[in-house]
Image (cartoon, rainbow, N blue to C red; front, side, top):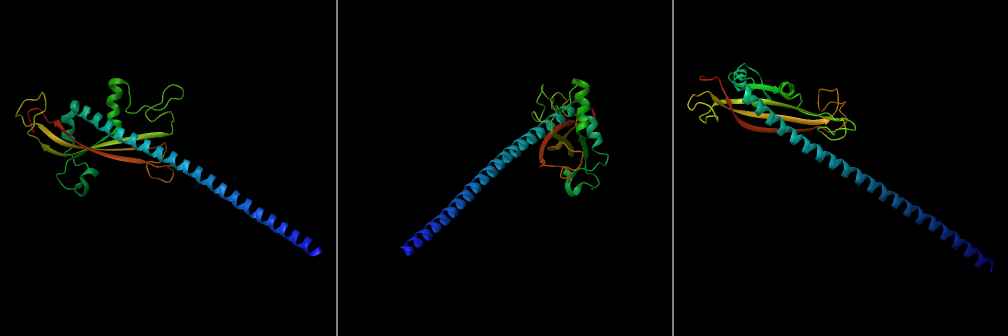
Length: 217
């Protein structure tokens, strides 16, 4: 009897030990599943944010190109003259410093100088809490920058609408628009150490007809 009773007690202790092990394993498994689910949701939110930022950068590149073309319509001959003054553009690649390469860098501030004087509007709208969402949504921690390089100036045989046919003063110019959208930061380098999140950069190229000096070349 004593032996049988001892065996039963040992069996119960063994069962309790097995139960504790199973409970610990189940708890660990549930915790791991929960952590994986939270991490997965966080990555999905991050991916959606990056996708949205990429779409915004595409839109900014298109906006910069359109705004530059609008400005060229008014001040075309000014830009064709400036392109021959020895500026260096990244869009020219290894030929940036080559004698005879044509280039002019149109900055965002230059475009905004025109839009502000004509319509009191900047290229991008900042976020205003409680009233407007701004150009990048309701949060004010995102901003955008755009610059346009004018390169590859060639005389064109295609007359610009409204110009005198055969005057030889119009040029075909390549526009290379670089846009980037990133968190607000005082660091001029979009990939600098103080920038807390990802910067999205998009490059868009387009061709346009630019008027040269009237009646000249």
